[in-house]
Each structure stands twice: as C-alpha cells, then as structure tokens.
Image (cartoon, rainbow, N blue to C red):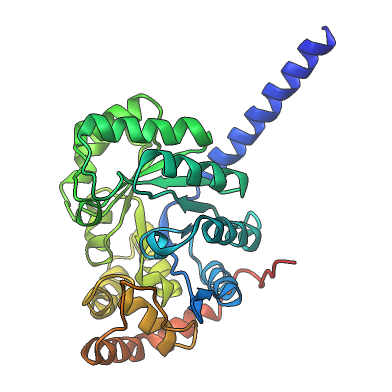
Length: 333
C-alpha cells in the first residue's frame, strides 16, 4: 500500500475509533441525568463551584452531565464562557460519564459555532433546539439541525422545548431527522406522555427518549422513555438516580415512594422561571450562590420558603444515599 493510502487508512481507522468511543459513551445516557446550573459569583462564572457541582453529580449516581442549556443560563453566557464550562465538565468527568453540550443560539450560524467549540472541547454529544424567537417551519428546523450535525460531527440530541423556542417539533420531523442520521435521540419537554410510544414506532427502539420535565418524568418512564434530563437532580442527585434504579429493577413500591417524595421539590423548582428557584435552592444548600444574570431576578420569599421546606424533607435521605459514593473527586489541573 502506498504511503498516501496508508495515511488515509490510518485516518479512517482513527476516525472510526473516535466514533465508536462516542457511540459507547452515548449509550450510557439514560436514567437520571442533570441539566447543570451555571454558578455565578460577582457576575462571573464561579468555576470552583461548577467543578464541585460536577463532582457531586457524578459521585451521587448521575449518568450524564448536560451543560450550557437553558438551566445553565446559556442565553446569558458569552461564547468563551461556554467553551470554558464544557472544558471543565469534560475534564472533571474524565470519561466517567458523558458530557452533552447545549448549542442553543438565536440563529443557525451561531449554533454551528457553538457546536464546533463543543466538539473541540471534547463533548460527547450536542443538545440542539430550534432557535428561539424566529419560530422556524418544520423544514427550517430540519435545516438547522442538519447544519449543526454536519459542522460538529458529534451525535445530536434534539431538544423539543416549545415553551422557550416558540415552536413545537412535529413527530414527522423527529422521524425524518432520525432517518437521515442527523439525531440519535430527543430531550422532550412537551409533557406529552403519548409521545414515547409514537416516536418508538416511528424512530425505532434504539432512539433515545429523555424527558425534559421533572414533574412527569416518572410517568414518562412508564410510557416508554429512557430517563430524564433533570433540574431537580442538581439538588438531590442520589434520590433522582435511585428513582430510575427502582424503575429499572421493577421495584414499583420504592419507585412510587420516591416519585411522591420528590414531587413537592419538582413543584417548588418551577414556581418561577427556571433556573431562578434552582439558584435559590443551591444557595440554601451552600452548593453555589443564588446569583442569576438579568433579565432573571432573585426568587420571591414564597418560593424560597417552599424550596426550604421541600429540601428539608429530602436532605437526610439524600445524604444517606450519597454515602455510597462511587467516585472520588476530580480537580482540573
């Protein structure tokens, strides 16, 4: 074989190994995963707090880290901040769990730039939503996802969150994106519990279906979903992980008990725009400051009281479960 052919074969083999590694890592995205908050201090990203949050999640059973999404206040982050956060998450994860990076942006060109950055920083996969405000057609959504997928060469999870984007993604659009090999799954924040079986029929059993709504996540599992990208898991990752373990083990009594135990915290966390209550709760638990960036503002006293009561109910059981830590802390150099 000529040197040029050897080099070409070597490149193809290296690329295939990278894709296989990504596929194996992506296969671990199920169960309880976390839509991570971005902690701020004095208007800057609090990197030390973010590292602690990542380590805490992994140690307490979270199956994947979702960074720079809506819960992470991505709309208020500068591109350099997003790149740094992805880099930190990938470094802390150290191959222990996948890192999925959001690439939400007001237009396709900006989303492509974020996707390329996420790939360079070592993200496992991308979370791609339609651009907000512009309200694209279904063809526009397909074109947007295609541009992102082709630019970054990473697996893409579609994010259907019409409450933020102003447009719903039709089942037929999800099916077409899957058939074209542009997406491998969906984060579904529509609360449509009839959707998992519909998408399973259209997209196949291997199509990854993750709930984006904590309040209906338990029902989503029963409808055929694979897990949840959770806001609540920022606070009680061990309990959220145990909920999914109970489901997987067919321990319906434990599953029902945990579902009902977590419900008041789910409700309190969405009493105001996410992540306003979450940031307040992180502050109450001394995990990060409650600082948000405008146009978000601090939580009301009523929301704070509800959060405090819900956290107090769960604290002892969360810490008991956390004592079964799986991993040591990883600190970036």
